[in-house]
Image (cartoon, rainbow, N blue to C red; front, side):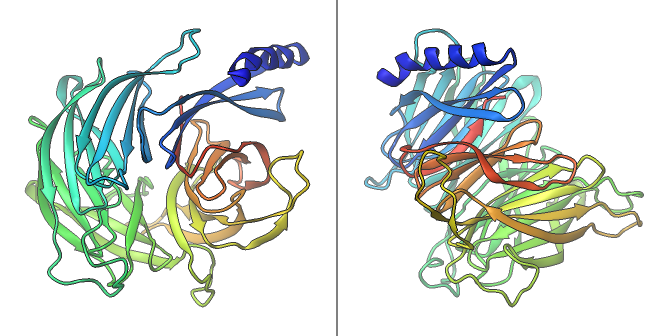
Length: 421
């Protein structure tokens, strides 16, 4: 309560310092069960401040993922539900009033266990469906009314394995870890960490019902986690204009695939064209226990794109400055890895992918990160540190900053962080 009452005084003081005060909200989920609303204030061009606006426990006990619909002012939260058989799905309306409460709960429903990721896909006349990946071997879909943030169940898919994968500890069952909507809004791609496949689903544009198509088989034991589509705008589009980049957690690998759409809505084929470690240009370099988590794609001003991957347990940076400038205690930090992706200039050729460098993640276990709309700021959610840090990113070169612009601690085990813009 003290912090909330003190916050307007802080912002007023900052406004007095400079006439250029920009504020952006971020929402943070944590396994402590809370959604925390943060205010990122920029004073001038170099001073940033993170402050806590509100805490909501409506997604308890284990908030694992946030899905924001900025246009309709909706926020959806998944609760992984560790202590109980089921998880939950909660929807909120985002508020912009002066009550001090930034989220208004709308619905809270029990859903199948271990939901860890979601994505929204769209149909005609503004219809929406939320697809949810459940680490406990399932995929569900939910019809959403974007105006009210209410939802109702549509479909449920339960996955089984014919036999366990090579990694007995992690691949005894199917483990869908993400839902990716393809650029055409016709397919869902679901990386399954336990099955070593990309599950493919076709989206009926009229009913928004999904139906399975042949899966993409991956290297056994690789453990696919998260992926992202890339539209390189080739000089001549004699084949698909899209590629797909995949982070595999168990192999610590980044793989690029050329995407081919099969006729008659028959599915997607993916052909690998590049692979390497998520933390080095050398496949011989090993960080024992490394577990890559998130992947993002950002443009570079003078052409091409940049891939950013977070590496957990890749504690490359030892004894660096504490993100909190008032704390002299040195810390060790895991890493963010960046890769440059150059578009192909030849017909039928895939893009080039090159490892650039590693930069500090700001602490331990960067489970999630996201970029702002402009692409010049990166918010990193550090699970073990209970912290969110903000780094700058040079949009000309793609270079990530080594110095933390702003940070805030005491958030619990952070699981995701999203921008409200």
